[in-house]
Length: 115
Length: 230
Ligand SMILES: [Zn+2]
Image (tube, rainbow over all chains, first blue to last red; front, side, top):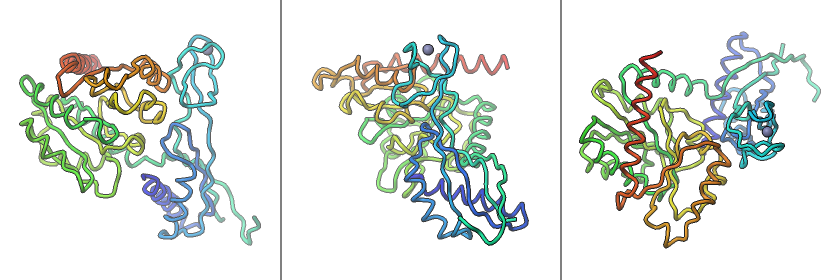
């Protein structure tokens, strides 16, 4: 699985942030995860628990926020939140919607640091 | 949670894959500058991806300069098989890693003069999960599935289908025997990637191979025009 390498990337980015702030301790990392990111939340958290043991941040916490899948329906001319990523069509008018507005996120949005 | 020291939240907007995204961006720029059209292939094991690529290279090399990179787990050797196509082939041994990353591609290209190529193919490791997350700088990503794998394959792996540009249904010579439901397969592709182009072919009998090559040449020509305009 690729989750372990992603967990290590997350810790690397935390390390960069800590260095930039004079070695500040990172308490938690907040991550946005979309259903089309190709990453399973639970697998990532398990991999992260393993990866942090081998890093200088053995106590850092990973907080994953799962964001919904949103597409733009060009017929309704509006954005729609989809309940399921295996059927990309407008829940109102049924038009297939390939225009993904959000749902691919695999992004660190914030960190809680000691000050 | 009570902490003895005070903490504060800082905004950090960073893509977890920023290193790969950056490598991929540089690769894509290089491919454009050298005028090489790069196609990557993803599929499950057993789709006939290597045979499809061998056949494609054999037919294409009559008119174009081609090469291929092949991602193999340590236990496989698709590269040796592909050498029969008579074009330069390089293997990328991924070991325990179940996907290719952009850095592996640029490392594997060291010493190759991309100016001398028209088409470069990158065969990813046989896996429909992990490769979805990694941009390789390719121009076109093909996702292959065979008629023997079932019509609902796209719905089972929506992310990889959603990140791919073209779906290729392989082993079409077995469609009748396996009672392949074409309509259901197309619906499954459209559900996860509306508007996606679908091609059907058999690398074994050659059925559909000419249409695939015509499609590829057309896309490559369109890309060249677009780059000239920009
Ligand atoms: Zn609609």
